[in-house]
Image (tube, rainbow, N blue to C red):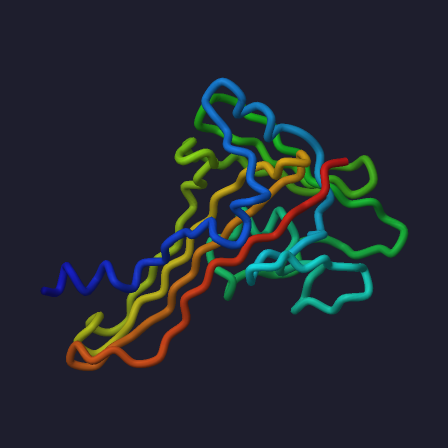
Length: 194
């Protein structure tokens, strides 16, 4: 029973909100993901209708929390932080390049200077590249007196060639197998190809 209930809180992916925009990737064309993209999102897929994001929109800490690099690399939203200097005149972007079928090099540029680079592993599955930097943390005795938080991400390509980053997050708890309020969400952002 414990094993069965432990799967109930695992974050699970869903393509419902962005399925119409997704271009399925295959092993032969995974290199289509390579390229340069804007660091900040242009579209948010949270509900059935995609929501355009303008520079005037105030997302929660959008310069850092929802930028493509942090969204892919940092495994848990609670540890996302400001990692680079902000300058109104700077041109920030992210570059993706596969080193092998399972290794993706991610570089962040500010103007023409590389300010951050990371090598992430992952695998192609169901038309998207699943990143291996999952986050899972349990407190107390899960589902008896405690809870679990899990988070994972995958990336894909929109039909117009932009980068899609999909995050699944779950944070639930229980007392004596009685589940109380928690949060589960699937959030996807689209980043414009440069």
